[in-house]
Amino acid sequence: MEFIHFILNIVRSILGTRTYFKLGNIWHKFRGQEAARTTNVQDWKALLNHPHLDPILKTMMLSFEAHQRDNMISNYWKGLNDKHISQLLELGFDNFKQNVALNYFNWPLREYNPQVKFLIKKLPRDTVSWAKQQAQSADHHEIFTPEQSQYFNFVTFLLWKFVEKQGGQKLLDNLEEPLIGNPLAVRLNRKLISQDIANSVLEYQSMAKNGIDFQSTHTILEIGAGYGRTAYVILRLNPHIRYIIVDIPPALYIAQRYLSKIFPDRKIFHFRDFDKFSQVKDDFRSSDIIFLMPFQLPKLPDNAVDLCIAIDCLHEMLPETIDRYFDTFERLGNSLYFKCSNEYTIPHDLITLKEKDYPIRSHWKKIFWKTCLVQSSYFETLLTLKPNK
Image (cartoon, rainbow, N blue to C red):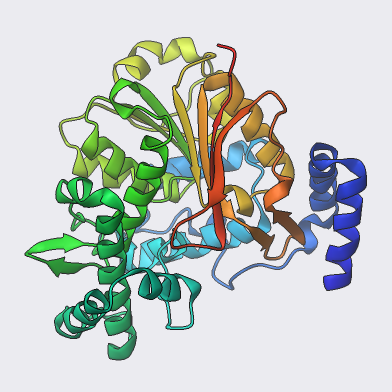
């Protein structure tokens, strides 16, 4: 495996990133049906007639299947999607933060993890001691052992305090983890806090401190939004923003149901099939939160959004998919913020992406490109896509 990766890296350096990405898609198609699955759960096609399958999710699944050629996803995520649908059917939407959401940037960590080491190093000793005491008396999470649960809570308190130290206290004061989905959260001063909110605020600060004026931002498009943690934070802090979420089922289904419950007064553009933008133009433009699948992006008009966001998702996509998204970001938006692993090999697809491999267009302007706070194995960047506009 290491030898193959070594050869692929040589090929990448010779051909250039964008050509390599295109050839990567040919490689993916060549391997195609040979790729291993991530799980032995049933293929979701076998679940379409399950008696507990929500008709809305079924509609999304059928639409996704009908546009498979336009939904180039890795074998890794094909397997995860099967697993997540099975989890929804078995455990229900009301518990999605206890299972499905664990694949959305929310992990149980141990003391040797770099994130934990970073937090302990950057916080005062008395704060670390306080976090340990708080964790001992915090609620136990049923999916963890008592020891795992206590340590998860310890990290949550550490992360929350670190964000406060970074100047995020005013933002955190206006946010609380929603109960929807049965979150892995703890209480602090009678308020429910979580790692998801803390991480979302760190990302929000990176954008806000480096040129994104959310007060003057009208429309945001986020791909790979998971259940909608980032959208929740941005919309709670900036009620005037129109938010477009682009994802595939079941994530799109979870996000649509989740955010619709959190923001019952906002007008929702529920996912639907349409042939031309003109068919939905009025409803689309009058909606506050919009849910789409990737194959619908080409139907949107040029310059439709101010800011594009992609957090913890690009590095798990096929090369051609990333390249296509970058073209879409440039056509639709003015700025792009994305956050990825420094180096990641997509399980079962034999594709490794490094920080230097993303096909950044030569005319894009880098506002910043840096290692993430806390998650040092990740980098984040903010780019202006139309610098001469």
